[in-house]
Image 1 (spheres, rainbow, N blue to C red):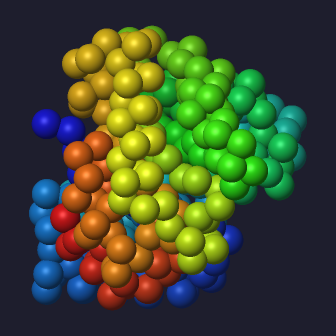
Image 2 (cartoon, rainbow, N blue to C red):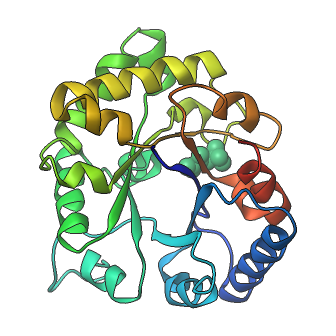
Length: 253
Ligand code: PEP
């Protein structure tokens, strides 16, 4: 059975004290109402990682993710953070290929494939993001774009390594905009992604991979999206910054 996952991408929000407080409130909230079937992943900024790992250490259900890692292993790359350093603080996941990284930091599929390799070589699970722009969808290119993002950025990995991957489908037009893919649009793309994974890694691996939806997911729309057959959870931005909203989403399955 594939894992249900709800991951919170805090992006560049929360100071260290605010982040500690948010994690405490999430745990507090979960102690009152918790869907134990769901794996929870918190992705604060790098500065928070070690604290976050310590704060969730009693709570096996929660893991911590970095929002990015370097495509290089170590050395003179000022300002970068390697997968090895991320792993060394007890972090288990890393988000790779978020559309904001692709757009603002010009991360190409080629660079992303190097990041994925670095992450896997350092025992991290990868949440690999893909998603089309509104122009690409209007031009009916969305399936083609998603397939090339996966093929060029992710599919260099081995059959064994695919077990460490979670895919997040995040249509760029839905991120932070308040626009959400309809449950049918999400299902259509998730089914397509599973088929593309199956073509490369076989049906068994494809059936076991978790595919998350991301893009203005909230407590009011999570239920209808998570109800879809090929949607295994969500990558949540804005709504992950408030404990009540985030735990509402966790309880939407
Ligand atoms: C995200 O950035 O991964 C995201 C899904 O953001 P939001 O939920 O705010 O649209």
